Image (cartoon, rainbow, N blue to C red):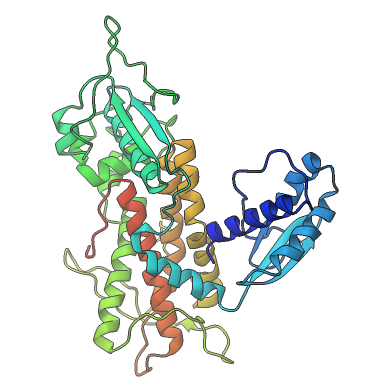
Length: 409
């Protein structure tokens, strides 16, 4: 059960309680937020829906939480529900929740996190006649479509040829220029998209680096283009966030190829051997790309050149189960990030999320393949499946930003 599915399950429990007269609320929430439990919580996910409903229902939050707890315990896939604090519902999922999440991601492929939440809604988007505004509008439209919406794009002037050829924006965006003003006003309920313009022409960076440079900063922040930090967007090293994201994706594809050569395939399941404790990676050297060719894999901890975040703890091995949990939480959060990106018209949220996924994936990668004479085990297959799921999320997210996810770097 993914977080989106769990959110719908909790909302369904609320609606059933209203329909059957156990709960009286005039206006139901459109959605229920579920997230990893905070301090004092337990289980896999927690929600504050009982606290949200307490005042309109005229009931104490703990009583509402207990009512919903009883209903949720009857739901397939939920093993336990605990009420904590002033009325938080802490939900534990049945059995191998992590394995189910990985299976859900692999089943959905790059469309993981897509939904029909905004199905039937037409969203008007209007951009200033500026490269960054048009790229931002294009990325927002892609994410809106992933949530079921039908975006309608207009621009204060036709897109320039270089924006279409190099930046990959649609060539058929209609222009909307009120007579005598020279600026667009927009035709829908959304305010015109007017991010801080790029201080220089982004096209020399090429499509992928330019779009990343324009989309990673929040719209109100100035992108680093044309200044001393502009070249970092092209740097093939760990100080470049786009490189880290694309490199992590390429590494997952290389692992799948190498695993096939060793005769095993990904299979979601427990990440550690029963009874042996956490599995660790203790190798002789880093995993590195050789020149300009495809990635080659060598056993050993992933290390950086001293100034990037792709590192193990430095002095000790990488603990697989601890590192994996952070990655699994980020993967589970991907549908929520897409929904928030669409709601706030903020592709920077998705870009930062992809960086977090790549950085959380890096410490796990050295332990995916068997080392030395070690035979592939169920744990290796499970870690390979988790790495593939992470790569799938990275590829799908980059695609929504209009950026390529190469299989080789």
